Image 1 (cartoon, helix red, strand yellow):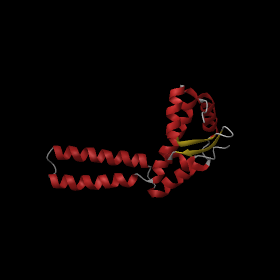
Image 2: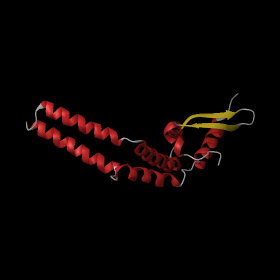
Image 3: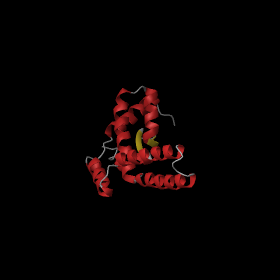
Length: 150
């Protein structure tokens, strides 16, 4: 069964426009981050990356042996890895979703196709009623999107 592309594009457009991020999402993410250790993860990451840069400089200046450098670098890398918490990824997903919503209005049809591919794993069409039956939201956006049916 064939479905007209212009009809499907209009239906997907309507679905994207109905997506709303829950109001409490950003507040909850901020709470999670504040409860972690009181330090903003972006600031903590910048601080650790600066320490890693200085460590490399100390090694290059022969102020550290290779074994001391490797041990300290592994410690810093472990601390950086610890900062990649689900809440931080949630902030990234929320910011990405906001950017995609904003870009959607200004996008060309090809760009909208690319955005839809980022937002959805699948869009199911009921060929009998010629309506979108269901959408499968891409994993990074699932926790943050309200029901698409509006």
